[in-house]
Amino acid sequence: MERPASSLWKAPLRWEANAPVEHVSFYEAAAYAAYRGKRLPTEFEWEAAAAPARGTGFAHGQVWEWTRSSYDPYPGFKSFDGVATEYNGKFMVGQMVLRGGSTATPPGHIRPTYRNFFPPQARWQFSGIRLAEDI
Picture 1: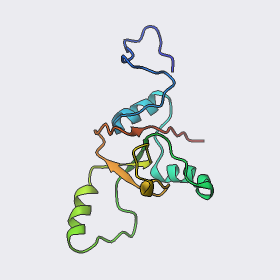
Picture 2: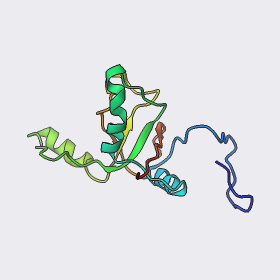
Picture 3: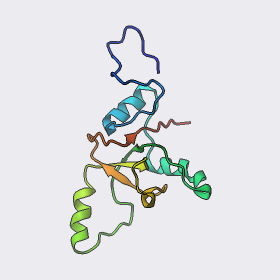
């Protein structure tokens, strides 16, 4: 990505212009998408884009990819009784969904339907960006 010469922005020390954007928060990912004139996909758009790979095995990238979806229960979700209710209640608030997988993801978690989640301000070490646009 080329920056105008008049920009006050300076590249970090280890900047690689063509490398994937990674280690970013949801806010940084959304800002980058807007800068590029695009947006982050919803988790449902992300999953639909990954669907063609299902028959041949899911090919993930090097990082988990932020979506613009909040980590809410799916329609019709019923909470478990007991301890799981408290667990789900604590973690289903204020989180954003990441999809995909990274080089550090256990094989059992790498599938197009797996929902990872983190607070939007977290710079998860294996988080990155996939851009979407309306057609």
